[in-house]
Length: 225
Ligand SMILES: NC(=O)c1ccc[n+]([C@@H]2O[C@H](COP(=O)([O-])OP(=O)(O)OC[C@H]3O[C@@H](n4cnc5c(N)ncnc54)[C@H](OP(=O)(O)O)[C@@H]3O)[C@@H](O)[C@H]2O)c1
Image (tube, rainbow, N blue to C red):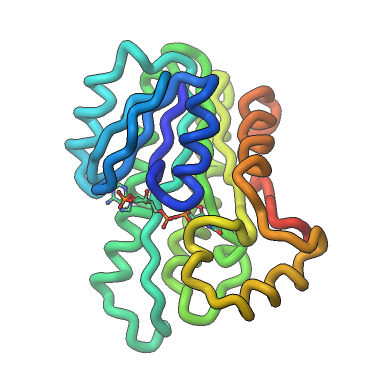
């Protein structure tokens, strides 16, 4: 069973549409309503509310077999660090970091019991390199690194892996607010001379699902830089 947070987002929606063709999945969005198609169960929850996460896991406990969780939900407010409002810092970390921790805590007992689990966090090259105006987003993503590594060390022996897919620039999602000139520049700075597409991510997910030996890593998917 796949569990996708951020399933209504630019990238999440592409993954949801393609993966629901031949996978059982639970697609989680916050406010946007998703069409229930075929094998997909679509739910709206606010991941900032830990009770809603518990209720979701309890409700679908019986469906949760061989879980792969894709943590895509994200919040990003642009702003220079000198006067970035502290409440926005907290809000960003609440979703991009704390909600991952809470969802994983709710799922781990099931994964341990089944001796199988795949935890996949999504990060950004901005988390590695920083970017003007995106410092708190970057910080919330790089916080995942130590968390991911420790998950792999604590739960690898139960057949559970935890990895980060670190994305470069993709056709959908956060990039849609960039102007044409900026996108052209990004493409010309990318060795593969294109933006990423959802199939690139699906190949990476399938690879991670197939191996219990790939664990605690950061899989960089950025077309070469
Ligand atoms: N797109 C890129 O080029 C790119 C590059 C690097 C990394 N990434 C990473 O890839 C992932 C997906 O990015 P994206 O571009 O698809 O993001 P996006 O389009 O901004 O989508 C954000 C998603 O998060 C959900 N969400 C927001 N607040 C929530 C809450 N409180 N509770 C539950 N869900 C909530 C939204 O649900 P609603 O629609 O219901 O509000 C939406 O589905 C992110 O982790 C991002 O950091 C993307």
